[in-house]
Each structure stands twice: as structure tokens, then as C-alpha cells.
Image 1 (cartoon, helix red, strand yellow):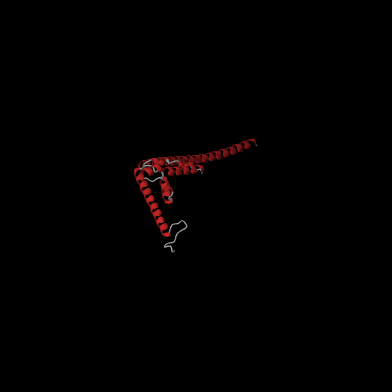
Image 2: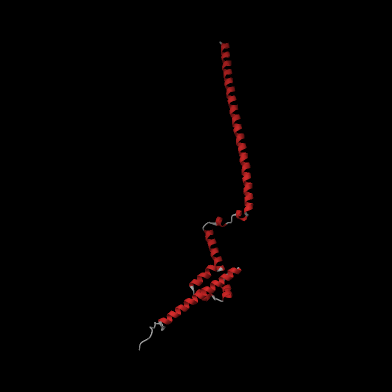
Length: 178
């Protein structure tokens, strides 16, 4: 007796197996499509994406997309709970690696642009005033140094004059004693 088509060890014909594979692939795609639609609807409403909200929105039970690697990955990428967990884990890792300062928000980011522009103008004006004060202090210091040099020159002339007078007085005293 001749068989019209070959049978596999499972007892199914190749044609039957191919039909089952096509049906499984279409079911995977249908599950993926329903899951995408459910996630989109939940995101549009701003609702969290969890196993329970997906079941309520699309009628898909977790087991139905957990067996489909593509659908499971899609759920895991969009899951509110899992993404919060991932953020928490990253935060802990950064804290351990010494990035605490990087996590602190910059207080200047709380300002709006007009406020930042006003603060920048104030600081620029303050800087100009301080630079003016420094210029004035420098000028005063230069004048003081010039005055000190003039006084030192006068002092040197007086000391020279006094030295000359002492020499004359000593000479006169010496002349009287002879």
C-alpha cells in the first residue's frame, strides 16, 4: 500500500504540520497585534501598563503573550511596573558608582528663560561693578606706591644731607681739637 503523503514521527503529515505552523504564526501575529493595540490605547489614556490593565483592555491573559517571545518583549518594554523597576535599579547602580552628584537636579533648570536672562543681566552688572571697584583699588595702590617711592627718595636725600652735615661737623670738631 502506497501512502499519498509522508508521515512524520508524530503521526502528522508534512502538509498537516505546515498548516499547523502557519496557524501558530498567524496566532502569534494576532496576539502581537492585540497587545500593540491594547498598549497604544492605555498609553493614549495615560493609564499604567500592567498585566491587569492589558487583560482588561485587550482580553489577553499574561500566559498568552508570555509564550510569544516577541509579544513578551513588547510587554516588558512598555510595562509601567517593569520600567519603574529598571529605573530604580539604574538609580541604585549610579548611587553605588559614586554618581550621587549627577543625580541631583541643577537648580538653574527650575528657572524659565526670561528669569535666567534677568539673573544673567544682574550678575553681569554686578561683575562690572566689582571690576570697577578692582580698577579703582588698583589705581589707589599704584598712587600709594608712587607716593612711597617719592617719600623714600626724599628720605634718601635727607639721609645724604645729614651724612654730609655729620661729616662737616666732625671735620670742624677735629679742626678745633688740633
